[in-house]
Image (tube, rainbow, N blue to C red; front, side, top):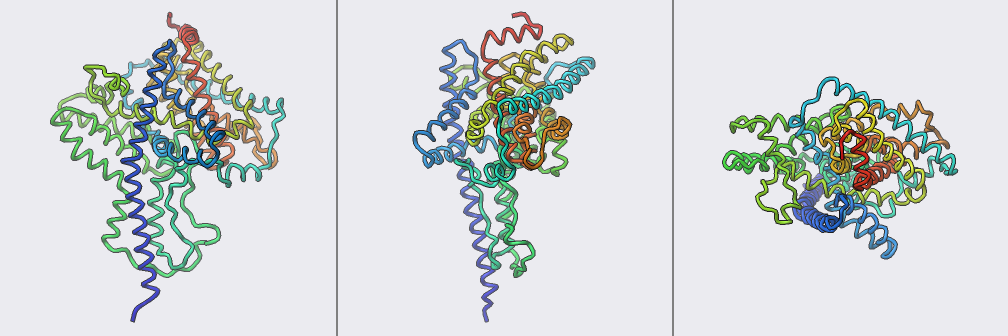
Length: 546
């Protein structure tokens, strides 16, 4: 005699596993066809813009120029073509842009991995650098907070009630949401006949599709998708029929689906990287795959640990040790391995047809994709365009003021204290998100390795001390007096993406302003450092003759 209930459970389980399989193929198609095609198109746009910029005397990063142009284009698209067509445009742009933003953290790895090649710093100068950083961080945070508060008081900025703003930015849909926030596979839990094991499996497979990197922190600080959970209307106390166990084949399918990215890079490392490296000496495949696997390993640390052991730092340390061991097996040194890791060959040089260039390394590959991430920062800026318009002055004026103070103040102070000019110039970009700090520092001729450390430490301090500092400064955080604008702008401008991610968990309203602030602050800084007369003044303040 047949068991209808058991057959229903088996049918639902098979249906869920089939849904998982279809989702996996769709994800693979997106990851290996749509994303590379979109990245290539964005890089071609950057190449064209760089060629146009090269005709002038201005030194402005093409990626930042494309970011600004894309933001303006999206605004025009919404105005001219309407909401529906603008949604389609954002959806298409988000396929490569969302990928680049999800994994933007790993694109910062080269700056840390190449630290052993940096010139040594004396103990006294290290103490001076730490002193300037600590005092500068607290001073700039206080300066930003009180400036935003003062502007709101002078301009009479209205403060909406907490519930009203929560509906606007927290629970409601965005006017034109980023498409990646709709890509997720939605497992159904509203029927008692649903196979619980298959539902949990579908929830696990949902993670790689979300609009954040696996560490739950996005490069721009944009709002991540919430972790899968049962709705309030279906509490976990509902009794369910025990499901039939998954077969061995289904378990293997689940394992492969959830670990597909890791398995692919393990395959590249073992069967492409190692043979290529030890037969031809070309290190890019083995170093690239090892770097990515190290990043995945760093992300597996418990969430509380990652507050202090940032995945970029941990994965960079693992990568340095790993490529050193691989080089020793070949008979080389760490310096040799690092020179192969980043040879300095840019994609624009290759497309311009330059001859006799060394083959690009893993670090060059990451730097190329980082350009795409910078362009994609226009997406979260566009997502919060209405907040930018409503509170334009309290957002834009503090960012401009902080940019000017950092650009001219830090190099002057560092020079007065006897810090090397290149390191003093790096301090000007101290509080930027690293994606924009690198081009700004490059324009000034600063130390790219040092600015990477400064940016990450600024973010960590924002997570550990930022909320406490705002309480000390009496920034209200209570009903009817909640100053989320000051919190968001202050933490976004001084601690960029990591502090923004902290706000996402506590106050998405403040996170919206934090995301805008860090993007605008970085754009203003890059723009200022692209003007030759300004660069000459700043360089002279740092102690270099022009």
